[in-house]
Length: 217
Image (cartoon, rainbow, N blue to C red; front, top):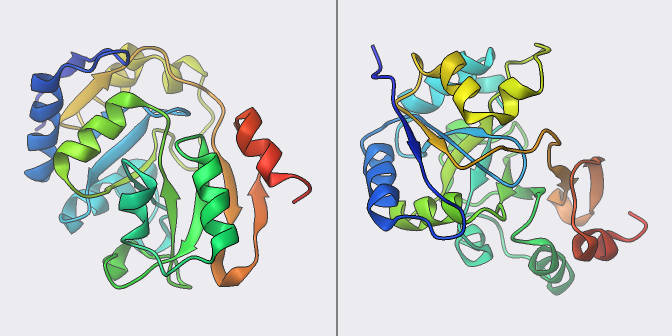
């Protein structure tokens, strides 16, 4: 049985003591709901396979069919977990991140194979959210994350964006909900960059600078 906990952290100046408490919980295998620059996300440390499996159950899919993202604090951190990028791809990521984009990348051996897509890729996110990036920085390695939405389930927008309602729905199943204010209801834009080509898989939220760089893709 999980303790029902919710804590408020402010984006303009995340409280370092609270950030440390969230990071410690994650480093002990906890499952935390965190704000991003799009939808709120279930998140856990990649060191704990059982936590990732528990998130898969919450989402309603098997671990093998799960589509996770690595939530990173910076492009520098992300680059430690993907295969070397050419200059053009690196420039694209540098222009889009931090931001509401998911880049499907060829993973290297630093990513546990349990979290890879069948073709050895992983979604990479560096959200433009100071709370999440501070937590990831405090943990010292990427988190595994996925949006707080069950597969194939339609819910009212408020239950994806309002941390109090997210806590009401999921509080019994997670260790902590971080209230970072109202979230977005638009998912990230997803780009497949595996194998050298770049293809937009899903049009979602973007930024003027990032969308300009994507051009006519």
